[in-house]
Amino acid sequence: MREIQFREALREAMSEEMRRDPLVYLMGEEVAEYNGAYKVSQGMLDEFGPERVIDTPIAELGFAGIGVGSAMNGLRPIIEFMTFNFSLVAIDQVINSAAKVMSMSGGQYSCPIVFRGPTGNAGMLSSQHSQNFENWFANTPGLKVVVPSNPYDAKGLLKSAIRDNDPVIFMESELMYGDKGQVPEEEYLIPIGQANVVREGNDVTIVSFGKIMKVALAAADELAKNGVSAEVIDLRSVRPIDYATIINSVKKTNRCVIVEEAWPLAAISSELTYNIQRNAFDYLDAPVIRVNSMDLPLPYAPTLIEAILPNVKRTLQAVESVMYKK
Image (cartoon, rainbow, N blue to C red; front, top):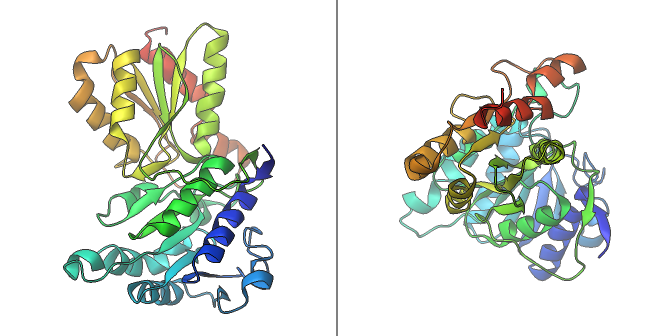
């Protein structure tokens, strides 16, 4: 099986769907002439032309609204935000139009649109370009929220998102675009809402998603050196959430640590913790522990970024705590 970059997997997914369906198009800042801010759409303008790969002004509210309107009228747009930090300018269109039109129209209108781009920390970008918004959008009925962690999942999930008749928030990471992974040449889809047990284990369940899966897997490797068998689950999507896979794992391991980049208040890990105690309380041998970013805006200095974000050390400490090894 060939190995390609995360950005190439995204490009293949979009290009394949645009060849398959003439109603699909890509629109956003610098997606065409510049080949994408992160070169995700490189070469797509040459293949599909300016009517289907469309550069926009720096006006997220405007081009998000154009995308929503076109989706309601039968097209299937992919709207790229250069970063989801900029999606706040367009959040009214995402929340009050895309997410609600199906319900408000009594099923007469659908909105098959994908909003995609990077989320979270990407290095020394300081507070205004480093926030996570997965839990914000996941709080909205009518949206689906997908956060892939590797090139294989990125391609299969993006193809499913483009074909979905509901609006999908598809969140990536600047720090993953160059990551390489094995991706089949033949077509495949990954269902939205199906978690992946990346690593089986018996002693503790570690749940994560997106680029923080690297932290979860690195922690599992360290635990294995000390004879601790960690089961690692990649959520893949945070709306819908595959609760069954998590609950079944906790019933086996009896302990759970959730690792998430977002701030702790009202995070995805908060929802998971509630659901675990609601549905697997009698199986828990220790309270669920969350490893989140510290509750303050992300600074610029690399040393402070490392201290604030979830990391392997903090994850190992959480596992030691649920296993009463401190």
